[in-house]
Image: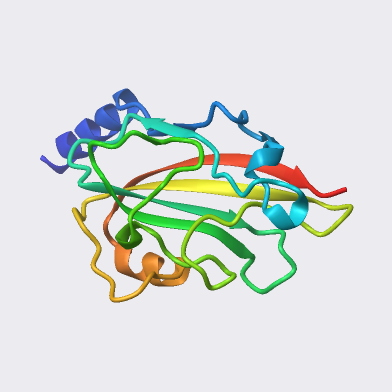
Length: 170
């Protein structure tokens, strides 16, 4: 019986499409556009447009984390922490306006989007990670950091999708 269950799991995994995350503002591993850069780096601090598809059955909500692992601080820099995106949402428009209970804190300590702004002369990599969760809602007294969100969703992530981009500052 165990062999049949294991085989069924392999077949389902092979036939179930992986969740996808993409942007019309930049291609995978491409350059994040100037309007999405922080105002400190000459941008407009406008979050990029994002769309996703093929979330697993049973997804109750989505979360999104944008991280710069190249930042010269321990753990990297978190540019956007978003949660409580309903299961019916399959994208965010450019310059997305989100509710207070959907926004976590960036590494700057503020809730909202803070665009890329690497040190002059360097290229940094930015990882947009979408999480499909089996949690319909995450309650928090205050905007959560990425680490706090990670602790809350541990064991509740059904699938992830990643979109990478780069940015540099002349």
